Image 1 (cartoon, one colour):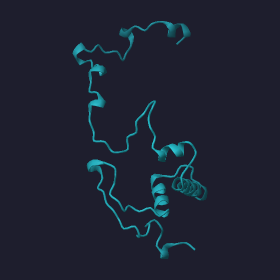
Image 2 (tube, helix red, strand yellow; image 1 turned 60 degrees about the horizontal axis):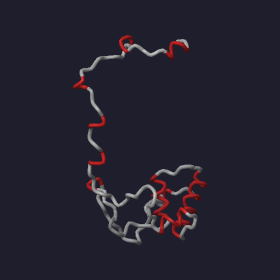
Image 3 (cartoon, helix red, strand yellow; image 1 turned 120 degrees about the vertical axis):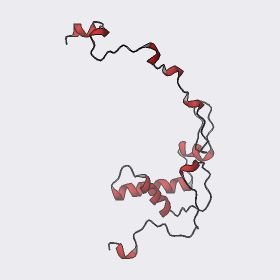
Image 4 (cartoon, helix red, strand yellow; image 1 turned 45 degrees about the vertical axis):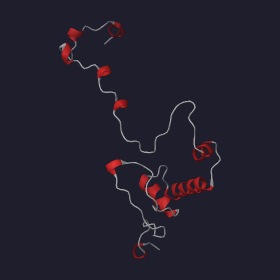
Length: 140
């Protein structure tokens, strides 16, 4: 195809893919279901977007570079994991392992509404992390 051919308007009748569909079979996406109308229960993870959104102090200080002790400890733990395991991007399982090794346990009911997709549970605060190999399987 020459550059001149590309500039010429195509004749739809000569296009092999062209099929004349009756008007009633053509779907106008503008008339379809508006996804915003499909109401789902809030999960407690939603954040307002756009100008004027108010950040919590927890988020605001981190975005301004002033982390609290908890955020800084988490950052150091993630950084150490990435360095010793040569992983640029830890998986979700890796992140959960790090969180549990930092001492976090699920001792409170969830503040999230995940619907029927997940069953909430709690555990005692003094349970082991459960992410280390049993002593007999460890390499020394």
